[in-house]
Length: 123
Image 1 (cartoon, one colour):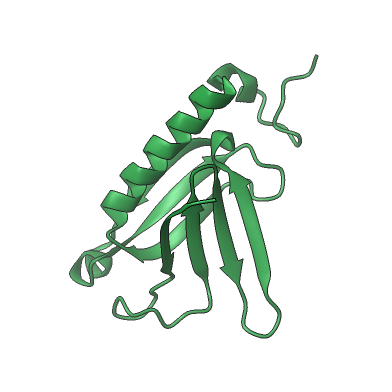
Image 2 (image 1 turned 180 degrees about the vertical axis):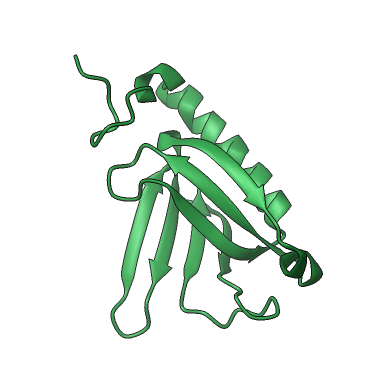
């Protein structure tokens, strides 16, 4: 499993003063939080439906941004990758990997139209 990108949440002046870590591989995104009690969430990239980048005035000053993801994942739902460096490049990288995984898995948007608890249409 090749790691394509990793970073930490940078909430203060663009410095990595947080216990939140992000890691992107070819098929999954991992979010690890916590100091004493750690939690690692993962989302399969083909389950991400939309990616949005927002950069407030202060985030632009300190060279960070927040990437919001709309997901059909049952546990992660919609989530954000908060205050990361080179956020525009990371957003594009994530978006490209999502498309590659969706093509490889032959997943289309119509499978997520219902967007209910299990993320699949009722049959």
